[in-house]
Image (cartoon, rainbow, N blue to C red):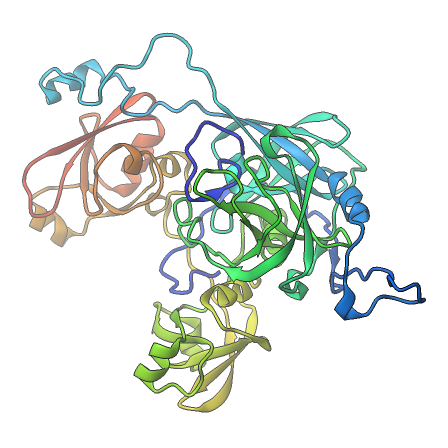
Length: 505
């Protein structure tokens, strides 16, 4: 996405599951449940073998693969890749806020956040990215970070026709979103099978870098199952098992297609490794195995149905082999269990080394995440474990994570904006803190609280705009009706000093 925001060294390209411990739950931005959409899946091994170069008949031998022409895949993909322009909601950070009159005495008459907001209408920033048509009726897959915070979305097709788009749903944990335009008979790409993709295989990246529409670049798959720790800022249970390529990808490519030489969609381009925000050698794509499940779930259920093993794991390496006297040198070791763990109930034990899921070899945490992320609660998976040198096969029925009450989650618009989770105080806590009521902050995620204050987990909210807060649900209800400057008052356990935090909504 092309925008004025700063890039990170590992950059989401529009601005750039299993959370195996099972201690967090997926959050989704859901804008209405559509009818189930139909997408195509091509499970054939994605490979195109060129003609022989020695004049003989038949295909070239496998040792002489020299792709001479990418035009077939390019033509097929560019017709289905779209340009997305998002008009973002204007950001009023607290450094720009004017503290409401009634709060100024709390700060000795000064504005602790610097200059007051400028007069006049604030200009709405814009950003651009890409998307891929996956259904002729106008369903488009893109990155969550392409549409996140957008007030309006405008989609331009390869034939230059422009449409307004609406968000059907999104999943920050995989950085995948589904949007829709009102159009029919559109060219659409079929999902390929990313599990069949091989390191060294030729691939094409198609998107709109720097607003240069319908740009195609070629490269090879450099690695699979990469985790680059980029999704955690916006996700509570990030799933990273990227396809890494050396196809050139730049700002604006986010949400675009990674295709094989048959033109099948094997990934959604998402991030680059860069010191500058521009391409510096490697790009990363969400594999189609994950992206397809996300959009299918959103279309069928309105949110992602994700199964969980309920285990904490770590990758097996030489140090672990020596330390724990492991009998295998590849796999992931079970370190602990979540509450009501599906794996524990099935008989898996701490110290077991998971070597396969449904017959597929597991050598890394991202591989296990990707394998489990393709399943929903109640699905059964076959797990091969090595226990003290003995191979065991365990059937595990995956579980979901129960969604807490509305007051405990950040899925409502205002709580997502703030990025906090709240819980009620127990009677014992009220007694210990010396207060009669309040709501305690249990987690601070990406949002205005983290960006603009130094509030820490454990803070107890006792008042909002001087009105007492009885419990977590009431705090959420009070915040949902607020606009402009808001004053949050409270204390930290063990400290009687009242703290104040001013934010803008």
